Image 1 (tube, rainbow, N blue to C red):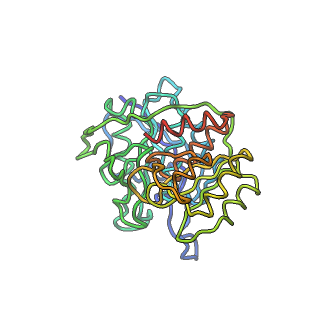
Image 2: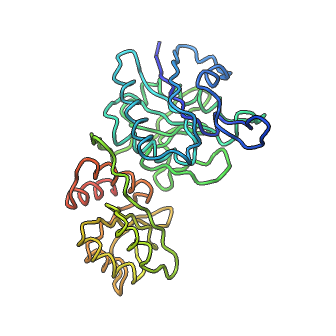
Image 3: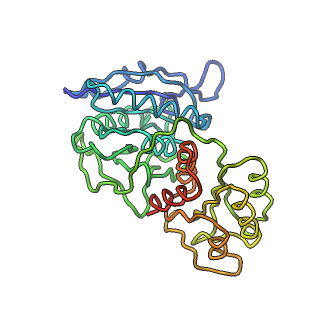
Length: 326
C-alpha cells in the first residue's frame, strides 16, 4: 500500500463563511478535509499534517520556506511515498516552485486546492484532493519534482500559472503544456520536466521586488526599490523584455550598486531576449540586466530569493537564472 502525507495550509479548499459573517475564511481542519473525501482511495493510506490555515494571499516567504522544509521532512521518512499539499490558488504556483527548488527527493510533491469553497454544492476540492493523492502514489510521478494537480490535469511547478480568477480549470502551462492527466483515477504522463535543480539555502532572501511595466513607466519605482534595500529587482518588461528608456537608464546605476536587475516579460508566453536598442533590451543588457528566458516574473523572483539566500553573487545569479530560463 502506498502511504501519502497530506499537508493542509488553508485556502479556498478549506474555506466557508465564518460565523455570522458572509466573509469566506479558511477554518476547516486537515482532518475534516480528509473525512470529506468521497473517494475511498483503495490501496492508498493517507495521513494528515494540519500545517496552517490561511488564505494563500497572506502567505509570506518565510512561511512558504517552512512549508518546503516540512515537505522534505515527511519525504525523508521511509514510510512516506509522496506528499500532497492543499493550498490556496492565489500563490500556489510560487509555493510549488519554491518546493521544487528546495526539496531534494524523487518522491512526488503535488499541490492542489479549489476554486469553489468547501460549502459550495459543486465544490471542486474533494475531487482535486483525490486526484492529487492518486498522482502522488503513482510510480509515474517519481522524479517529476513539485507539481500542481487541478481539474484532472497536472503541471510542472516551473511552468504552471493561474490564468483565471474563478474558473476551475484555471491552471495552465502555456506553450509548455501539461505534464499529464488523471482520468478516472488513471495517471497518464505526457512529458517530463527538464529544467530542474535543487538548492539548500539556510534562509530565503525576502528583499526581492517585482515591478510590472506599463506605457511610460518612470524610474521612480525601480529606484525606490533599490534605495529601499532590495537585493534584486525583477522587471516584467514589454515583449522581448524591453524596459522604458527611463528604466534602462536607471539599471546601470542600480546594478553597479550591487542590486541585481532581472528582466522578464509581461507577456504570458515567449522568452525575453536583448535585441532592441534606443533604451530598450539591448541597452538594458549592456547596463548589466540579467535576462530570464521564458521564466515568469513570479518564478524568477522565487529563484532569486533562493539563490541570494544561499549567498549567490551576481555571476552565479546570472548562471542559474539563465539555466532556468531555458
